[in-house]
Image (cartoon, rainbow, N blue to C red; front, side, top):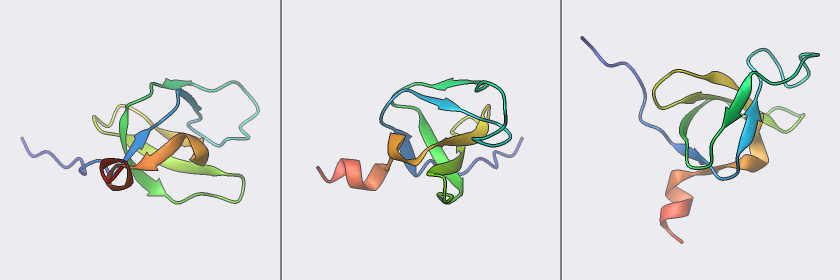
Length: 78
């Protein structure tokens, strides 16, 4: 079976809620991503300060606060 999941480029640096439809979807978030969760950016930061991401295993696709994620490359250079 072919694995078509992209290698993660970012990581969650603070526990953060995620919204599947929109950060302004009108109901509570579907869940939270734990600190350390590796993710791939699907859609860059929107004007509202949210970025659409996918978890490494593909189980979650949603919007998270841009301030709660960081590039894996930037973290490894610290």
